[in-house]
Image (cartoon, rainbow, N blue to C red; front, top):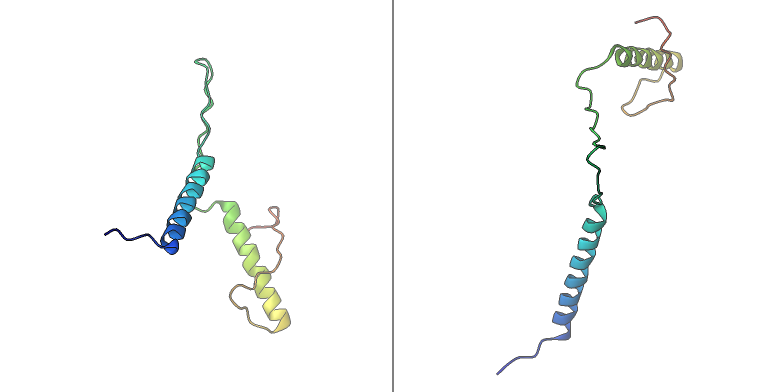
Length: 97
C-alpha cells in the first residue's frame, strides 16, 4: 500500500527547489563573462599586492595621529577610550616625528 505525500512535504520540496534555483542564478551572475580576445592584444589585469610593510608616510601619519590624540586627552582631561577616533587630517609636509 502506497502512502500519499502530505502537502507539507511537497511545500518543502518546492521551497528547496526554488532556493537551489535562486542560488544557481546568483552564482551565474557572479561569474566573469567570457570575452573573445584577439591574438594581437592581451588585456590581463594583475592585482596590485597588498603592502606587507609600513611605508615612511604611514609611520609619519600614525605618529601625527597619536600626537593629536594625546594633545586632545591632555586638553580635555578625559583619557582615551578604544574606538574613539576623531577626524584627522594628515599633513605630509609636517616635520618628522
